Amino acid sequence: MTIKTNSQSPLKGLLFAPRFGPIFLTQFLGAFNDNVFKNALVLLVAFQSGKILGLEPAIVVQLASGLFILPFFLFSAMAGQIADKFDKARIIRIVKVVEIGIAATATAGFATSHAELLLAALFLMGLHSTFFGPLKYSILPQHLAADELVAGNAWVESGTFVAILIGSVVAGLLMAIKPQGPLLAGITCVVVAVAGYFASRMIPAAPPAAPGLKISLNPFTETLRNIRMARGNRTVFHSLMGISWFWFYGAIFLTQFAPFVKEVLGGGELMVTALLATFIVGIALGSFLCERLSGKHVEIGLVPLGSIGLTVFGVDLWWASPSVPPQDLGVWAFFADPHHWRLVFDLVMIGVSGGFYTVPLYAMIQARSRPAERSRIIAANNILNAAFMVVSAVFAGAALAGGVSIPQIFLITALMNVAVALYVYKLVPEFLMRFLIWMLMHTVYRLRTQGLENIPESGPAVIICNHVSYVDALIITAASHRPIRFVMDHNIFKIPLANFVFRENRAIPIAPAKENEALLNKAYDDIAAALEAGELVGIFPEGGITRDGEIAPFKNGIARILERSPVPVVPMALRGLWDSAFARKPGSSLLRAVRRGIWSSVELNVGAAHAADFADPFGLQLEVARLRGSAK
Image 1 (cartoon, rainbow, N blue to C red):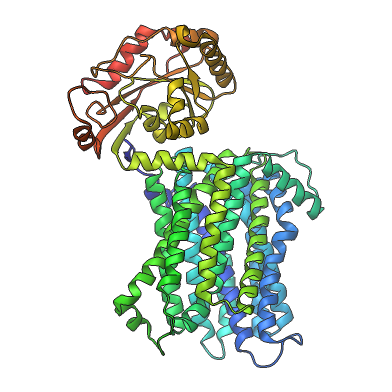
Image 2 (image 1 turned 180 degrees about the vertical axis):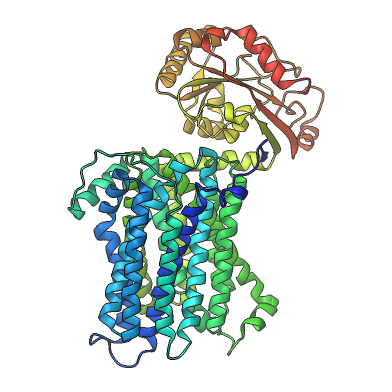
């Protein structure tokens, strides 16, 4: 089902919106600066003769990586507290001022070839990133509407990886200039840091979410407290673990990329950059496709699709890797050879799959975390990410020491992804349930929606709709930005696949009084409890699927619900389903119905909410009929 709404995708205009553009530019320049400095330092160390601090250059490179990651373990908890307690825009500006000082320190280190000063600046740059991370993710929900959250994260994720690529390239170009390269790299860092500060000054105010929070200076106890806080929301915590696993997976590929190109593909530095660019273009493409396919709401059904791609294309990358590398293969010769296109396609699709995987997870963490705790939960995410990246380095080092080839490391990582995915989806079946709905809907219908903004952003409401087919609830679920607990005939729960989908969606089974009065009464109790908890409850007041395409009289169940729980009623109407594969239209074979149903056009029209006092069955039936119009 291709979902088209009556409003334009937020992706196009968001980048230039004053409430988002400065945030994006600030984080882009920060990521760019990190990578200019890190890569310039690595190149300086790698090609500097003699020992540094009495250590071999290879060891110094590993030490530098550790120094950059160390602040994430020591100060992420404090960074999360500060982001929750104070105005985030103000803290971002302070962090950017500090970045200018760090860049100046780095410039002095480059100018004097003072290794200790450069390593200190690297530690401070990691500290800067530690404090900025919770700010850039937790500020998005304060400045973006719910239907812009996926688009905002798509821009941030793609921008971060593009900044990594450009920063790495610029560092290489600057360091190639002899002998002024290191000094030019330092000056570039200062200029970019100043530009980042001026960009941050345009970020709108973001009032504190927990102004009364007391700051704890103990990094260990506060880290444990943040992780326990994240564990309080099961779905959010396992989303954190999913993102951290992606950083394990991604760190394996990024750190082994240069050796892979050199030792397996027989390429040089230019080919490393070119293939890294294809990977990052894939991530950007996946991030933006994720926004398009999400229907302007957080669609976690794309996460399993992304994890499948990470495994399939990771395995195929191993399969497509040559056993004997060509000698001195140039970048143009590599891309001109059709035998290599499959490998390039794998790299692009691994990036696309990464975008599908991470963007919905970040958006869901932001959407489902309590505002007063959001920054600290994101800080917990940074701690877990850093831990998984360290473990990935240990894993890769041990594998290489054990004689495992780089393509085999890619294969093992891709296969490990299967085990991780199955474990996560077993713990949180909502991911798999949404994936099944998304897959079913995107292979059958082209859905147009109108009036989705009438679904309340929060609070209880009853959703009512005409009942045309067996998949009505799935279509409405796919289009809604909020979960809906549908009241379903108890017999549906006996169908294997439908049982899984509706059970995980916490549907409420119901039966006629003459068939099972106890279940009927329990259903009304469950409906009242769900509305009391502020949830959306969906019902089909006709009591069954239409057999003639017309709207049957609404039963009194809706009146009984509203008498007990006087909440708003949101009317909806489906049209275009009567000729589909899943309707009960008589006089046609299943084959003809399937032919009619594949990619048929379906519309969901959502009307304005009605107060409970003015919602009676007959009036609601007339409203649904009006929304549907003459089409069936």
